[in-house]
Image (tube, rainbow, N blue to C red):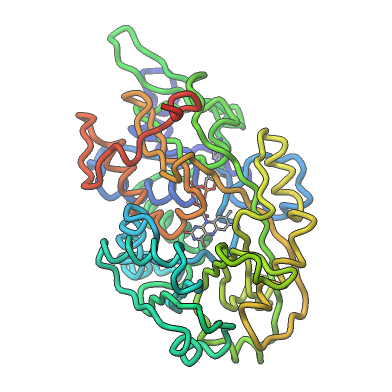
Length: 437
Ligand SMILES: Cc1cc2nc3c(=O)[nH]c(=O)nc-3n(C[C@H](O)[C@H](O)[C@H](O)COP(=O)(O)OP(=O)(O)OC[C@H]3O[C@@H](n4cnc5c(N)ncnc54)[C@H](O)[C@@H]3O)c2cc1C
């Protein structure tokens, strides 16, 4: 990981101190931070200098017990869909997905598999009704299929007579989060953004005699740099180093997630070649569910992973979630293999929803989502020089391009005015105390 020799462009003396000065430093080179850096690199003025700092993915997560900073993007598949029960989320997803192909062309990196998306649930369930209402309000492109049509369209799905499906045929499917980050960073770098592979240990605000305020950023290597503005896109780890002013603490819960990767062979992958990304919900019918079948799950269709094998991935809803409260707990979760009881129900649910494949092997993996009380993102300035873009709530991967754009517009605004067309109130930062108001 340690490539923390500072880039050449940083060697200029800032204020005679010998320490480099940036106009903007984005901390956190994950999904939102990389997207923000890309946008800022496109709108910055000629002589402005920006950097993106974050550690690259660990090579051997389960055996590196020294490490305590991770990302929610260490995977090959995240569902991309526009339909949602919340109009803001739907809009952010739609605007992001719209520019996927353009970013692929710009960067030369493929990250979007447009295989479609299906939400499968009871036909009159609140789950289905809420998605239809919000998605129709946003004029999204989707269809609702009754069970008869759904059985014909998706012969490999276990559709009951009183189920219905919301389907998005186009502009949906799954993204590869590793490749998407690579694409965003490539474009940012081409536009002059310095990318520094390191962890930030601290951000300290400094006010000079002429009242100018800037930040001193200390890297884990001990190296320092200065920046006129700082944006924190540090996901679940925002409170674990000295990045924020001591108070207030963000109102974010860190939630453990376990996923199961089920290996299949080429033959089964071929049979399932038309499988879309799937959300499955039976939360209003739990008493009718067979043993070992969860009431909510999401499923990614067959994807080839870097080990050369093909996996179908399944994740849970609120079952098996735990709130993690310390840096140590989060680090141990990332180093571990997930909830000990999750494997059988995840496999049982996958086999209940998808028919016609033989599991060859199963592997559990872990991740952490950041949950805000209202599932909203926090994109806000905590002071004129320090902003945050955090709180992905398990849904931000597909929308990171638009989220990065909002953060970029906010943090580069000299006047502090909010220029994005969705009101600022939707993205306000909440502290543990204030969010109760
Ligand atoms: C199991 C799972 C499944 C998911 N499925 C989906 C899905 O299907 N569709 C979807 O849209 N979303 C999904 N998500 C959510 C999505 O992955 C997250 O919302 C998204 O990754 C959040 O982006 P982020 O930039 O806020 O955080 P991250 O992607 O975690 O990035 C934060 C970055 O900050 C860095 N960092 C932290 N602290 C420091 C520091 N002190 N110094 C420097 N760098 C630091 C980290 O290394 C990391 O790279 C899923 C999440 C999980 C866990």
